[in-house]
Image (cartoon, rainbow, N blue to C red; front, side):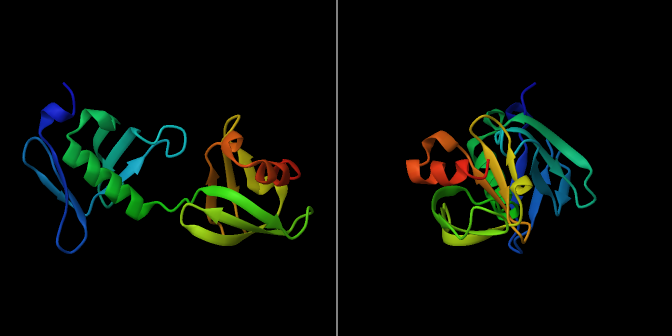
Length: 158
């Protein structure tokens, strides 16, 4: 049976907290939507968990739920996750670490401190995860799609 056929609810209360109502009509307050693979497969393997981390619902793929539930799950996840995407590099302070990078993200222009080359993780051939000196993780979703200057700067660190 698909998740959509279960007739579930995933809504936000007036206080801003999320709740889940199961197909059996049981309401669970203070729940979170958690992605299993936020970078590699953001729409696959989503769990709804209670405040103690106990899984209440497993959604193999978000296409299996109604558009309203899917929209609310995306909203809940975006409120919880913070992983800006690096779109462009304008410059770096040095090609040795620590180095300050001047970058453009999907949330605006900023800078990050790269403490060491080990803070750049290659997740696939084109996907990189960069952790700055404050622990914030930045995602480069497709290295090949970045402009030539940005790729040239990144190559010096890879």
